[in-house]
Image 1 (cartoon, rainbow, N blue to C red):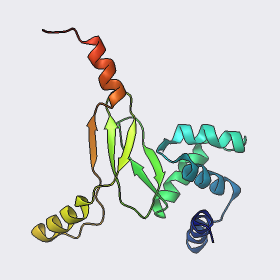
Image 2 (tube, one colour; image 1 turned 90 degrees about the vertical axis):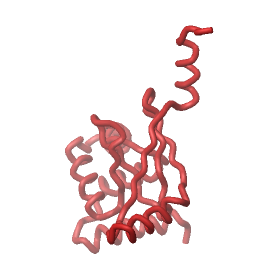
Image 3 (cartoon, rainbow, N blue to C red; image 1 turned 60 degrees about the horizontal axis):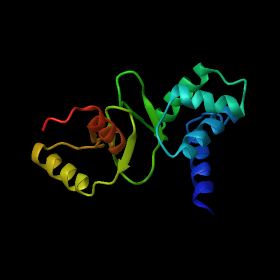
Image 4 (cartoon, one colour; image 1 turned 90 degrees about the horizontal axis):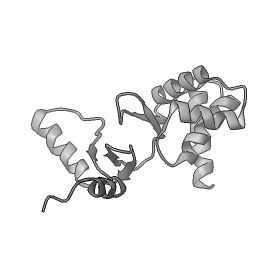
Length: 154
């Protein structure tokens, strides 16, 4: 069985086991989130979903995002104050770099986060269930653009 088939089956099982119907709209939204390979906000997910199902509403998108989050199928990230971004949860823990100029998000693996979580948990007698690290700065494109607009101070 392919990895994609396993994930589709897993999502259907999670929906079914939580007494949630597996509707065409839910299947479409989950598939779009999977295929995005990144972090979509609700508006972008809605635009993409309308291409596959012109009858889907924005409120349906929001309701299903909250359901998927509650069921542990997706993660919600707050990269800026105005939008929540969503991604399908993967088995691999990862962290995020966020460009403060253009909003570009880059995922990266940080092997030290496991060690850090364990050490902090032990030190404070705390059962840590999730770690979210977000580093902000300028991506190479924005940094180059900023360097071009800054006057030479020599």
